[in-house]
Structures are given as C-alpha cells and as structure tokens.
Image (cartoon, rainbow, N blue to C red; front, side, top):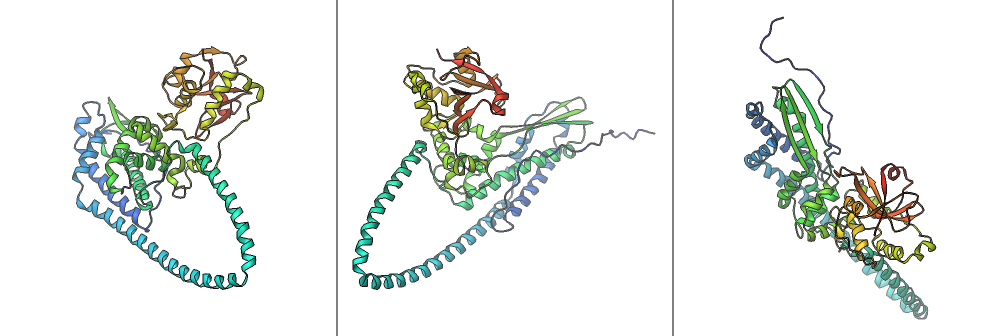
Length: 451
C-alpha cells in the first residue's frame, strides 16, 4: 500500500470530561442558553486563532498559550456579547418587577384585611375589658421570657460572630449570574480540552494529565464578595471572576517527538483564599462562609449547607480526670472556644477563622501555658515537637496526619489529642473526631509533644 504523505493517527477515545458539575439554569427560561451560545461562538473564535500557532508548537514546548489566546479573544469580542448580557439582565429586571408588583398587591390586600380585623378586635376588647387586662399581664411575662431566649440566641451566634458574619450585599439575580458566568468559563475550558486534537492535529499520539474542573458556588461568591466591597453586579465583577479563574486553572501542553502531553492543573477554589485574599478580605470571606451569606436557599445542594447551616459539629465531653492536668485544661479551654468555626485556608485567628495549623498554633500561643510557637504549618509543628509513640500519647499532645491533601511534605494535617482516641481539630468546621474512624486511621502519621 502506497504512502500518500499523510500521518497515520491512532484512533482512540477522547479523554473523559473532567467537569464535575453543570451550570444551574438561570431564572428566565433561556437566560443560560443565551450565555452558553455566546461562549460557544467564542470557542470557535479561539479555535481559529489556535490554528495559526500550530507551526510554533511543533518546534518547542508551549506553556500557557491558551491563556494568551483567551486574552486575545476577550479583546476581539464584539458588542453582541454585551448585548446578550443585557438581555439576561432585562429578564431578571422584568422578573424582579413582577415579583415586586405581586408582593405590593398582596401587601395592599393584607393591609386592608388587617384594618378590618383591628376594627373588629377593638370592639371585642372593649366588651371584654377585665379579661383582656389579665391576658396582657400574662403576655408581658411571656414577652420577658422570649426576650431572654432571644438574648441567648444572640450570645450563641456570638460564638461565631467574632468572624463578623455577614449576608451577601448583592441581589440574588446578580449572585446567580456571576456563578453562571464562572461555570461557563469552566465549560469553555472543558471544550478546549475536548477540541484539542482537532485544533492541533499534527501529532501521532496524545496523552492527558487532567485535574478535575469544578468549584462550590458559595466559595466563589464569598471570595468575590470579600474582594469587592458592597453590593456588586455580575458585569462589575467579570474581571475578578477572570482573575480567580486564572489562578485556579493552568492548561498547558508539552511536545516530545510525536507525542503531545496536555496537562490541566487545577487548585481547589477554597485553597486560593490563602494566596488571593488579604488579611481583611480573608476575615470577610470567613464571615460570609460561616452563614453562607445568609442565603443557604440559593444552592441547597452545596455540602456547605449541611456543614454550616442544617448540620452540627461533632462534640465530646472530656473526662473530668483528664482536666486535672492544668496544662491540658488550659489548652482545651482555648480550643473549644472555636467549635463550629469554618475551615479557611490561610486563616490563623478568630477574626479570619482557621486552617488546621493556624488553629493549633493559635491555641498553643494563646492558651496561657507560656508557649510561643509562632505561625507555622502542620509539618512545622511536627518538626517542633518531640515524637511520641501511640501507646504513650496523652491529652495535650499533638496528633499528625499524612496525605489528607497534596501538601508536598509528609505531614498535611494536625490536631490536639484529648485521650480515648479522640482529638479536636480544624476540620470543616472545627470539631472533635475519633482516630478510629477509617479515614483518620488510614492517614495517621504520629504524635508529638510540646516541650
């Protein structure tokens, strides 16, 4: 069989999609389809530009070319993209006006009905004056009780209010639109990967090393709300969304001989808080996350709804005899102040909440035992303690774990051992846990004593 000069390509299935979620449909039936259609048009533009780079890719390793193209495509977008967004916004505005009109009509009808009821009630009260005086006395006592309970509720919320918990200032429609825009960026990224072999067809073999594509909407919206003060619209935070996206995803490829290796590195969005947010922004982010911006109904399927709103943290009653050790008692008194606080990457104080090492460092430095270990990592804490065998571990020792995430060092998580196979740590949220649980047992690294 003669050679016609074309390369022989091995037919093999495309890599599976790494997109771990889909975009939730926006209010207004076709709003999301409008955004998606515009993005698909942009992907077509990107493909045309990428075709021009093929010759250069054949000569050397190409890293972050796709990011360059995205910038080019953004610069060439026509007014049609803005027009599509305006269509969506008009639909939101119309829906909002309709809801407001409906609410106003209901309020008007309710006011009329209330006025009639008040008139009837006044006539009845006049005829039952003595009975009503007794009733009012009882009601006053009940009111005092309810006031007391309300004060207790405020105090309970105050356990987390050190985070300055806050509701999202933006309208629900803008929050949903910003989330949809970010999801669209992720879908466009998946499309780039899916179309890679068609865009660059000159290689004999293709290999893929791809992280997952996805995020939690509350993490995204809390980050944006922390980075942009006050109420914002989706259009106003488009640059912020692109900044976060560029920090989360890195798509690159390397050419060796006739093999092209495509790599997608993706950092979990919640981990970016440690590098993208200032200390003040981190505190705001923690406050939003603690109450999910007071809007848990927006995304009820988010795991954070159960962690922070509907669920509860794991507690534990430490045996009284263990608390006879004053050093340990001091530690646990400080540690338990923050039960229920959310896990925040880079957090190291009550105002920002904590990550695992930030939490343990704070307890060590502020429990009144005269220790000062500064701010270090879980590995740093392990290096600063004296190793202790499992059999000799006692309450107040630190407990270390490995492989809980890709930390680049052996020790990736730390907690405070309290005895009876239990420890308190900055999980998500801060809570007690048992080392006998399969997950923790499989990641146990060892124990260390503070000297």
